[in-house]
Image (cartoon, rainbow over all chains, first blue to last red; front, side, top):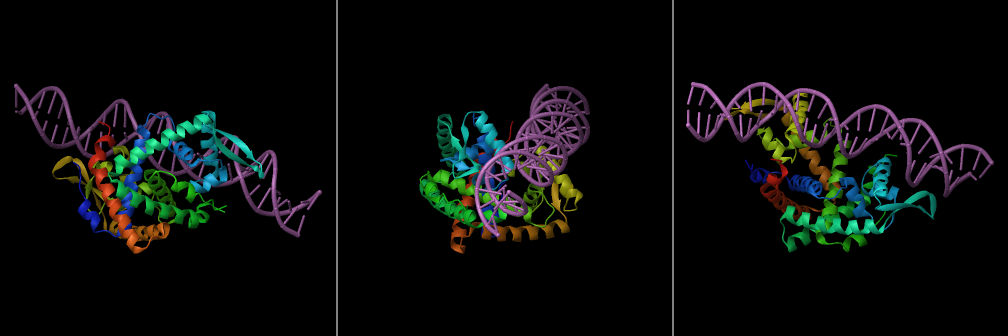
Amino acid sequence: MTYDDSALIRRLSPEVQAMMGVYALYWKLEESFDALEVELSHQECHMMVKLERPKRMGVLAADMLTVPSTITSTADALEKAGYLTRQRDPEDRRAWLLVLTDKGNEMRQVLMSEAGDLFRRASGLDAEETAEFARLARKIRENIMKTGIPEGLKK
Amino acid sequence: MTYDDSALIRRLSPEVQAMMGVYALYWKLEESFDALEVELSHQECHMMVKLERPKRMGVLAADMLTVPSTITSTADALEKAGYLTRQRDPEDRRAWLLVLTDKGNEMRQVLMSEAGDLFRRASGLDAEETAEFARLARKIRENIMKTGIPEGLKK
DNA sequence: GCATATACTTCGAAATATGAACTATTCAAG
DNA sequence: CTTGAATAGTTCATATTTCGAAGTATATGC
């Protein structure tokens, strides 16, 4: 039943191989996050991870490649649960900064270490491979953040 | 506005760096697929890509890390659109094989080449980096397929 | 000031995913 | 055989998630 199509995969272009790996990993990680005893939705987890320091909601929307109204409802949930507060951005009083509370920072630490475990288990890579994969992933992410955002937000 | 936190990212563990890259890439690819002039949903695209050769629906569910009922509705849509047909598996007449039609195979070719382009543009990697990334992604995927499926399907 | 752009919110609709109960078929045991 | 348990897939109603258009408040340019 464990259906093995690794031979088929090898015949595809490297780009498609890469995509299929990324999709498998993404799905697996999402599923593992679900299984966590944490009461946060995926989107809420992602936002927590992004909030190493206070960020504007618009920045988060761009960063998470989603729409402002989604950020609003995610932030609402996290605020209600006591993980973050909204503070007006002194540089532009239209904007809010989302700031983690102490409780939020604790939860963030838990999430980060769980995330590391999940990746290790899901990927099965050793330390060296993980480092190399991380290097490329970082490069990809930088490219996306640099080039991708304008298309991402409908004007 | 193009918010740069690449310096912050570097301070995280490689595992988390890798995850954030994977998430960014996944989201970007999903968004790009949306922008395609193709009238297929994400799930439908994924199923098309998986159907290089006929597969049982249960195999697809395991492979796509999802639930049987989702496969049913995705297959319904693709069948209705003329991209695939259901054929009883002669080896087990409870099971269906999903088989791409000619139209389905054409569409699959289009999707695969589009997918390659999307990855190339989104990632910004050169050929060598792409090959390395693909190698690791394949390894990860094999690990997930090997270890991940049992947990993935509720018994 | 006035017009226009931007940051976020509201809220209702649309898309998606899920799980429990069901049908049909297989398999194993007697 | 035939009976009972397991398996493959389906149905459908529900829950979750996402989105987008219209609205409020603030900022910016002329």
